[in-house]
Length: 375
Image (cartoon, rainbow, N blue to C red):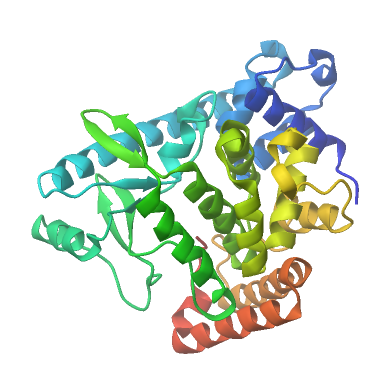
């Protein structure tokens, strides 16, 4: 299925910001109000409202409907405010932990935003941290300071969750899902811990606090596995691919691509990595030589992955649906669609293992079947 005219327009806007290239203004002179509305809604769904707005701001103001322009500006301002709130929360957390000799390693989020032309326009939700073995100690410190720490079977076992200045923080005990279909992630998990022992971390100044960032090889494994894990059950958006694209653009010279390819192949993820990276080359203008060995010039699965799993998933969020039976129907149908994607990327064995694992979790926690929101 070819990419639609509107989606091609969206990619032009994204790439203009990512690569700081001039937009072909003539291409947007005759865009209708309905098409502009589509671009806005699709940018929101893809987590790229700020990034796309940065490109649109270079166009003559009369090309964008006034009411839509005002909505877009308001949304971007909210993204900027959220970004600054995250910075303040991270600084507060850093100051608290520094008093107890705990170092913070920041995963994704603000650390990735520094690679973007306008860091505050990269959308993010929570703050993910790893504390170099001080998981339990840090949780106790939060509780002593009157902050609830959520753990247990209803929370992902790899991290605890608490809130700082209204911002959710995930304190990671470890990095990857390692159960059921993801048992091979143990190979990658060991690799991540080994990298932290043998490679120096980078650093980021957040206010008065020094926060650590993962070494590039760590991020290479972690970012692509974050995308693959989300694809298995939640779906991904173009922002995830933009993260991978801009990371490879920034660090391709320092990565050991042979090691990456060998380890990801041993874990069974090479096909998925190739497909995702090829999408970045074909649609986000990632240079072929920045993609390393993960670019394949032609792959008939590429368009299906882009359309079905990213641009136009058949079943999306159920947060606005009130009827419980309709929620169950959509979640069931969505699970079937995710299974098709898992077969495409990983084969039948992985797909069935993942599906049965999800069914088992729902039997143990049936209340989640009727939960009206998705992560």
